[in-house]
Amino acid sequence: MTASTAEFVARIARTRPSARAESQPPDHAVSFTLIAVVVAWALVFVPLTRLDYREVSAAAILGAALLGLALFWPQVPRFATLAIPLGYIALAALLRDAAGGGSSGFGGLFLLPVLWLALTAGRRELAVVLVAMATAQLVPLAFIGGSAYPDSGSRGAFVFTTIAAITGLMVQRLTDDTRRRAVLLQEQTDSLTHVSAQLAAKNERLLELDRLKDEFVATASHELRTPLTSLSGYLEMSLDPAEGPLSPTRENHLRIAQRNADRLTVLVNQLLFLARADSHPLALDMQPVALAEILDEAAETARPAADAKSITLQIVGDPLLEVLADRPQLVRVVDNLVANAVKFTPDGGTVRLAARHEADIAILEVTDTGLGIPHSEQPDLFNRFFRGTNAIEKAIPGSGLGLAISQVIAEAHHSTIRVESTAGAGSTFRLALPLT
Ligand code: ADP
Image 1 (cartoon, rainbow, N blue to C red):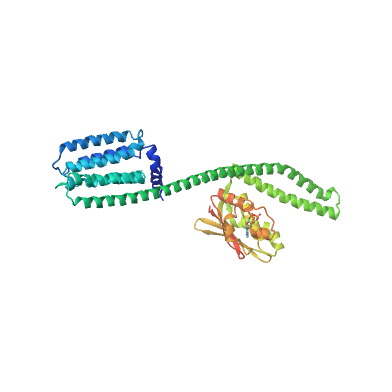
Image 2 (image 1 turned 120 degrees about the vertical axis):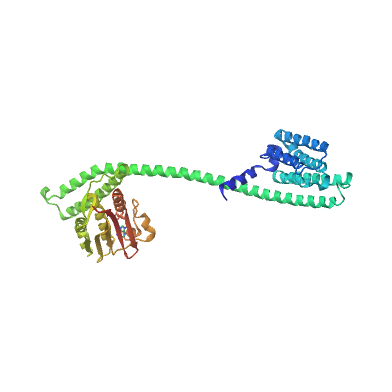
């Protein structure tokens, strides 16, 4: 249902007949009475007929009285609700008689109050006006008769009143039905409004919590950095042979502590990078960068891990390809993609680092023959702290921040990292950059 239909229905619903009769007049009561009276009176002259001017004058006075009563509807609502339709029937009967009786064609005006009450009042009021309508047709038949009101008019009066009753009841039923639906619709709208207000409040709260979380992570990482630096420094000093010999067990303990301190340092640095990226746009030092060099460096960095798993590293790079980028940041992205490829590829697999160009765009690709990523998880890959089921199920270490950071860097270069992957068949991560 459209908004305007709902509004229309709601307006009808607001005009409940019983409530109306006791308080307010129906909407547009005065203007409808005015139109009905003016139309009835104007029809007398269309086409110009022989008229009984005394009756026309009486009808004019009655019409003015009805209009006056319509103006005072709020003061006498119960009285006006019935008096105006009944008065209108009298007005129509007077005009009918003034214009020649049964053959004048004015009988149709009796329908107006019936339809009006069917829409705005209850069954009782409708019954009263139907009785009045029948009376207005039968009284002249009985007391005036003759050529103006021939006997055959009684059949016409019966048919006309029956049709008016059926039409009135149908209209009333339709109106009631519409009102019930409108009330239901209003209730549903109210409850939806309530739910949406609750959701908006919850959303606000979540945003606030998210902001607090970011603030907390930024502060905590900052505070962790100083003690971590000191811890790593002392661990290095303790492991320095110049400080004296260590028992193999103690050296092993210190090396484990150093490895964990290094992992913690990486995590804290990642968190600080993202916290900074949230508050300031990433400052880039854009320079021409040879992609083949970047691929070679990334392969060298990943080689120990790859060799440990017998993974073949392939480099397919056009030595002439140069892009405009911030070199250290681009290295960070490629290192991360290659490290992931090695991490998520089982022993004996292949990781391919490629750089090619399409028109004036350079495409940098890291493809592996590894575990792959299920389609359902791909939209979340670049969310902070997201770790796929492949990482969780196989307990592959990581923080879930590497791809989020890589994407921030790609976006700072006005690009995005895209992924193509099939679970069990490997993945390709792709970054497009403008050629110099
Ligand atoms: P981390 O590697 O520390 O878990 P990332 O942000 O780098 O965090 O990666 C997020 C997740 O994306 C990983 O946990 C893993 O599930 C998935 N993923 C990333 N790279 C690959 C890849 N080459 N093959 C399979 N899954 C990958």
